[in-house]
Image (tube, one colour):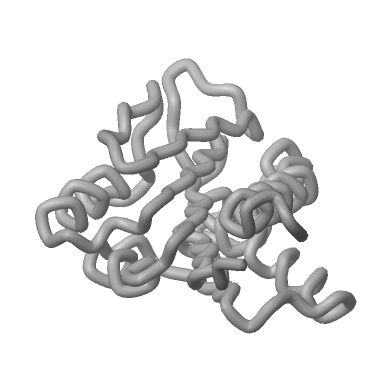
Length: 168
């Protein structure tokens, strides 16, 4: 049986910019779940401000990286989640943009050039409505946190099942 490689889950954003903290909120929820039923040691839960170099460092060497970030869309639907998957191919951009100056797309392309992309990258972009200074998510974005944490857990389980040759 093949040993599973490292899995990185990264919440991107700023916890002090309201909905931009959704990635951090999802990681916090996953940490709560991990306290109740511990995960294997090769799963890393981290938060990041979105700096491309820091993102790359967090997913470097990972077989699977799952990134959760806030996004802005026009017109937008607060709380709507977009799932994008990259598996040894180019990430086609969603109809949304990052809430950061240099975004995830730049990090992906830089990692590609440097040969540092994870084998599989899944991005969850959550449409926000409030990027003002302050803490706490808007109601629609807050409602997306629990189902999104469940989706990340399902992605991890699916990846582990696939890399173990179908054996659990």
